[in-house]
Image (tube, rainbow, N blue to C red; front, top):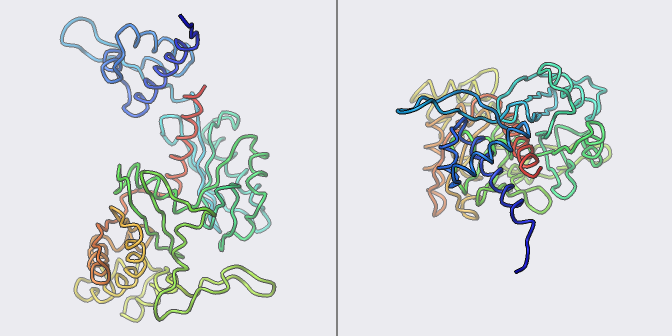
Length: 392
């Protein structure tokens, strides 16, 4: 009979991973519950927990009273067995959060990079500041994910082009990894919002959906089969440059000598925050920004309906274009305009899309609280860190 000495070890690794994944997803459980939910025998479950305790990954966190006999010990993942950093990098602010392996954010800081700060120093300073606030050594980070506006090349990990972050260019990804002495992931900010939306928001457990972000510009994230679709060059979702009737083409996208890049033309010239603010003024709504104007229109009832109708009609041009190609199960409106418009805007977008194409998508408002880019970055970093622990 052929001997396969590696099989017992492989089975132990599979059992350890199954128990860890269960505890991370469900929270503290008893030995009996772990055995029942993983299909492990009582003996095997006990051996698995003993190994995980020895590795410092699992500990007893309490007791559960039983109907008969002594209380059962509750086991949970040791929060400090791994930490991650998630960052939201914008043109004016860098926000960093540190979370433990269970996903609890233990520190969050915001920094204002000076005009002469390069991307590496801006990120380094924010991460170090957050680690100090959390009292976590930089060396204990198992994952670092950075959300930025712009196109991220999935082949190199570098930002290929960002209107808002002109200093982010090829080579920054490697420089950041070298500076922080660990692997770093740079991801498009709207893609990270979709990650947060699927984990904690309106698209929870939805396999196929698109998320439309309406802020300073307009962006799109595509999730197919539960996975982000980035495209060959990372440009999937750059819907702001979509040609639409009656609007100039989005030319001069990238900077050329003597000329700055432009956000004019294409769909972005119709539904960016600036465009919405200007449109609101025509309808008699003036505020500090697009969100305030849209909120005022919603609160104004019938008087604000024409403005919401026009915003929905403009958004529908982009949403319909996506729907006839992908036919997603859900469309999530996010960003300051999407959140402010609420159900009044989503209903109008549904109806407007149905008028111009064969599909009537389910359109919903984002349900992620707080900073969705930061939340998505933390979740993506946690996935990396947990995979590292499972593999170890």
